[in-house]
Length: 431
Image 1: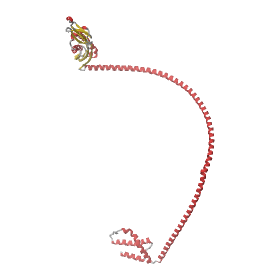
Image 2 (image 1 turned 45 degrees about the horizontal axis):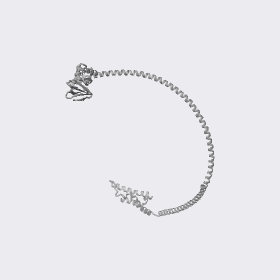
Image 3 (image 1 turned 90 degrees about the vertical axis):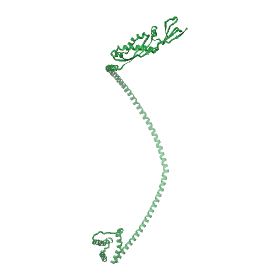
Image 4 (image 1 turned 180 degrees about the vertical axis):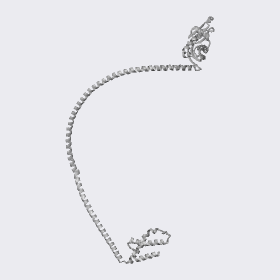
């Protein structure tokens, strides 16, 4: 008895052994196979693509420069029966990691051997050729293992002594220089061509502008002629219209004047009637009451005038009487005063010297009181003098000046009276 085994397109089924002790192997890809129990041996091998990343560090090139190269390879087991048989002989029973390790070591070995035959510039500047060379050299060896190299590319190339960096700088500078030269030449050629194109464009533009100007001038002249003709017709029509309008307006104005004349006549008639009515109304409402009021005011004015005249006459008579009374009173007082003065004069004529002296003496205290009134507030009088005879002289001088003062005040000369002169001399002696 046996079992039926199936396999997908990404695997290969290897059936070894069969009936009658045969050692023949059968390879099935994406199908099925029958296997006998205890007789047939069933094994599988992957057909999926395996990605490898070979890396060679510090490998010296043909010029002795140590560089490091990394790549990416895509490999798989070939499905041809003969080549699949080679792969089964090499890798059957091994894991995918073990298969990758074997293929990776093979690729790295070939990569090292090829790096030793090339320069850095060849490796760096033409990576595709370098990768193709690796595929060509490694393909036979891995092919004998039943492995196919689907692709191999150089991932990175670098060194630790900055050789590639320097190479890149010089190459960059050269490329930049060539690029600048190319740009300058291109700009020069472009400028020349642009100038030529601009010149051609300007020539064509000038020709076109000239033709357009000629056409525009002809158009403007034609339009001006048309406009002149149109304006002439418009002006004629406008003048005719205005003339006719003026005539019509004149007729209308004449009719309006006639209407205004009729209206004015009617208005004058109405105004005359209104004036008559207003005159009568004024006579009735203003003139008659005004005449009555004027007569009333006239009578009142005459009465007021008569009243004022009578009042003024009475007032004048009153003032005259008062004046006459006051004049009589003043005259009587004056006569009394005159009589008094006359009597005093006559009395003074009869008085003797003794009487006159008595009158003077009676008046002296009053005079002395008036003279001494400012000294009433004085507590004491101090006469400063170192000579006693001088004080006596001052007192005598004051007494000598007294008659003069009395004469000035009263008009009486005391020095003419012998008695008073003697009394005065006695008083001076006593002092």
